[in-house]
Amino acid sequence: MRFYDTSHEFYCGIDLHARLLYLCVLDADGEKQFHRGIPASPEALLSAVRPYREGLVIAAECTFTWYWLADLCAREGIPFVLGHALYMKAIHGGKAKNDRIDSDKIARLLRGGMFPMAYVYPREWRATRDLLRRRALVVRRRAELLAHAAMTRQQYNLPAWPKRLAYAANREGFLDQFEDPEVRTSMALDLSTIAHYDDQIRELEGHLVRRAKVHDAHAFHLLRSVPGIGKILALTILYEVHDIRRFPRRQEFLSYSRLVKCAHESAGKKLGSGGKKIGNAHLKWAFSEASVLFVGKSERGKKIVERLRRKHGKGKALAILARRLGSAVYHMLRRGEPFNEARFYQGT
Image (tube, rainbow, N blue to C red; front, side):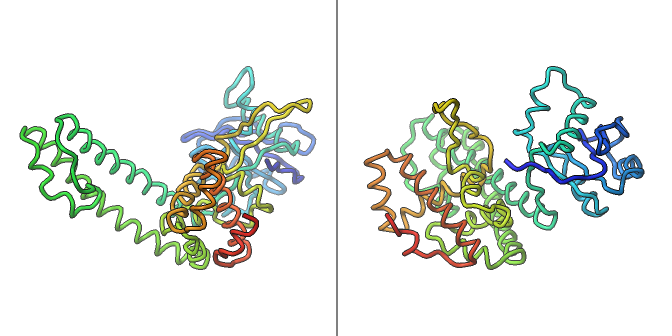
């Protein structure tokens, strides 16, 4: 966890909502200079903080509405700090909670050097990252339709379809096995929607690859050098990490990627682990998928996983491999070097 501890003349805490925001401005001595609600618009915000612009820092919790506020502060040259929602216990754990109290707590955490920081993803890459995440939603919906088609076949006790419906060429004749016209219509709707999703996903993936080559072609190709990491996993890692230099140590990157467990200890006793929801779920998925695909691409990797499986079980064996892949990707991006198989297997 990182805290913002830079000194300023004024500290502005904002409880941010879609249409309203509540401001609390403290001076360096902790005295309130401004504390009220205003409309959530750039004009209203700039007007409210105008008397405190010199030496002002603004902070807000990481909610879905922070984009415009971060962009406004960047354009106006005002330091902006984004608060990590899961770490801000002083706000979430209070007995009483409202916008006025929350904005005051944000400002006081900021002034006291105890404001937990989240990463302010830059505007230039942000829309592409969100588009990549949107692709995942479309892929899941397509998978739901494929699953519905399979379950409908089972409902009517029909023989297994010999080919994978995921491929368009394998869908010919699929409707003919259903006698009921209503069921056939339902399946036709599924297949038509799947075909539409196929076209949309194909077009979207091509666009994302072109954008990645504009943003950071070198890093994109470095990621593709890892066995098992194709274009989608490379895109996911590239856009979820953005800049590997924001992680000073490999351990911080692995923690952010949810590839390590965080131990809970007290009085010398281990109390288990926690923080499973803190970190980036997209990176966790990418490295988990990469570990499975890596085994299929590397005979030596398959032997290592088999050895680990006998000792720890299959799930933990793949988790260990995912952590090793995360470490390899971290060093690759830091050094600007492609995947080195000899270095990866060193010590195994």
